Image (cartoon, helix red, strand yellow):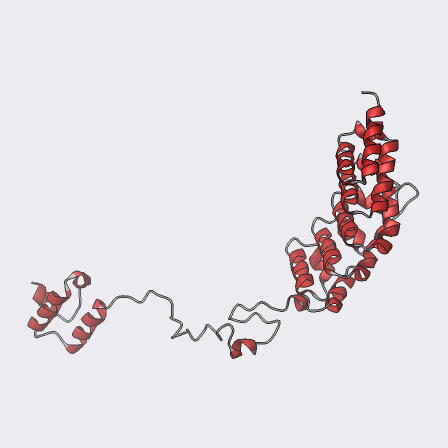
Length: 285
């Protein structure tokens, strides 16, 4: 029965499950089987190709191999089939502010600032943020770009950030004090405290120190004061600690200002630490 089925010239599906030796014997015994039928049986006995193309036999659609001369000659700024990333700076140039306000775009801008080949390229990207510092300061995405500018650029290249913050001063609060009270703005001031040389930081640090107690008691401002006491210049830490001494009771009874006092006792100069501790002990309760 099996021989007769195989001799018809049509290969039944169950023939694939017969042992190879039996298939060959049955095929030889069934003289009616044509040469095309034998070729079909041989192809059916071969395993299916399931593995990816080997390195020795690359697919024609893979493009040049990474690291080869052909890969090096691929046009810059183009997403090649090798997976080469386009020029990050070229992708964001001319639309830095628009991208900075977007959750994904702000990451692209930060990546461009990190990978830019020269300080001039970084400064050119940052210049597109001029006039937008306060908007960026309040933006949950763009504030990260401003911080990256402060970290990646030379100090003179991000002077426009300081200038725009200070230009927002009012009769009640300086621009720096307003920024320190903002949930995102406080982060920008922390980066400025870390990165600015003393001569560049002098004016906005004066604005912050003059508001020491008010900022120390603020939910966000207290982080700026803690950063100043840890990373500021010795004269700045000294003056801020003196103001905390003069308001020891007010500051010591506030949940946010207590963290600032703790930082002053940890990072201040020895004589300032002692003076602040005595001022606290003199207060009743």
